Length: 347
Image (tube, rainbow, N blue to C red; front, top):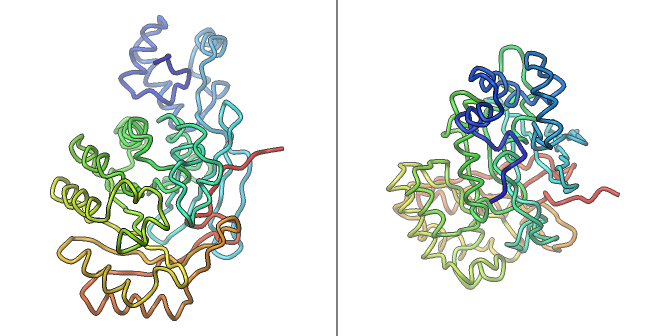
C-alpha cells in the first residue's frame, strides 16, 4: 500500500515516527497532532518551523481530509447538511443534528455505495471509492471546528450512517474508530459512536472479535427474507437468521444493546402481520427498534406509511414487549434525513 499523504490518517504513534523520520524533535509530533485534530491547515501552524511546514507542502502532504464547501441549514429543526470536497474532486455529504443532550454528526464512509437498498439515495451512483480513516475523521474534525465553543465540544456523538456501508470499508472504519477515541485527540467516547450496517454478518462478528464496541445498528427494514430481498439486495447473501445470529454474538461479546432500523414503506412492510413477525424475530434479544417514517427519494419512487399506521405498528410491537420508538425525521427539507444522502457532482 502506498504511503498516505494525508496526515490525519496517522494516529499519534505513527505521527511521532513520521516526524522523527523528517528529522524533527519528538515534541513536534504533539504540536502537529494538536493542530490536525483542531481542523487546522499548514498555514495556521505558527509554532512549527517554517522549513518543516514547507517540506510537508512541497512533498505533497495534506493536513485535512475534507473541506467544507457548502452548508445548508434546515428551517424546520436547525439540522445542518454539509457538502465536503475531497482531494481528488469527489464530493460527499454529512449532517449535524442538534439535540438537547449534544450534537450528533452523521458521517459518510464511502463515496457512493454498492448496497443499492431500494429506499436509499446513497447507492444511486454505485460505489466510487472507499474513504480513508482520515477522510472519515476529517468530517468530524471540520464540523467540530465550526461548532465548538470555548467550553463545549462541537460534536459529542457520531453515527456512521452517511453514504456508504461502513463494514464494506472495514479496515478504514476500524482505524477511524481508534482515531476518534484517541485520548491524545478528540477523545470522543466509543460509547458515543453508532455504526449502521445493512447486515454484513461476517464483519459484525469480526468487529466484536477485534475489540470494537460501537452501538450496532442494523438496517433491517423487513421481518422476513422474502420481503427483505425485495428491499435490500444484500439479503440474497445474508438471511434474517444470519443477521440475528451475528447480532446475538455481538451482544454476547460486547454487552451493547442492538438497535434495529425499520423504514416504514407504505403498503410494503407496515402491515399487522409484519409487526407480529418482527416482534417474534427480536424476542429475547436486548434490543430497540427505531421505526423510521420513509423519507422521499424521487429516483426510488417508494411511498411512506401514514402516521396513523406507523403508530398502530408501534403499539402492536409494544403490546408484545418490544422496546420501540418512532424516529423524528430531521433535515428532510434539505435532503439530509435518513436515506437521502447521496454523492453530489459539482458543475
